[in-house]
Length: 145
Picture 1 (tube, rainbow, N blue to C red):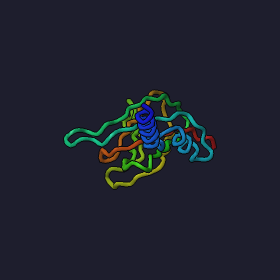
Picture 2 (cartoon, rainbow, N blue to C red; picture 1 turned 135 degrees about the vertical axis):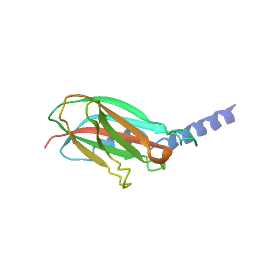
Picture 3 (cartoon, rainbow, N blue to C red; picture 1 turned 180 degrees about the vertical axis):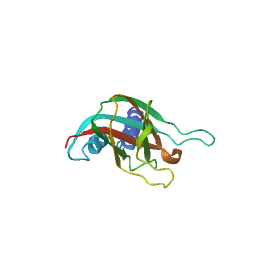
Picture 4 (spheres, rainbow, N blue to C red; picture 1 turned 90 degrees about the horizontal axis):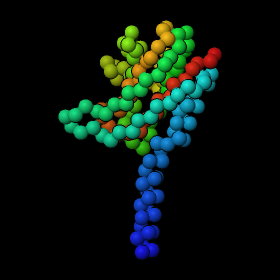
């Protein structure tokens, strides 16, 4: 009985350690990555690798943004996983208004800015490039200076 309890306890510790990079500490690190910004909200995704023939998993989030505000969107990834977070910001009236990944050039950015021209709902679409396994965080901030 003691032996089985010890084995279960060790397995529980190992499983906790495998997800240790994708927790509140990663969110805190990502949200403190810029100066002159104020935290608004964060969004987190965690997906396994996409199977062949199927589209990669995607996280969809809605957020209300205000006209005249300057926003900065940061992305952070769990370095122990191969997935790199791709974020796209869209609206019903303007289509795509920003993102951290340029598909035509392959350029990837840690953050992107958006100056809101119309108050309303905006949508963040998050996925991992090439359908890789990963854990990613997107932090929405308000630029204050």
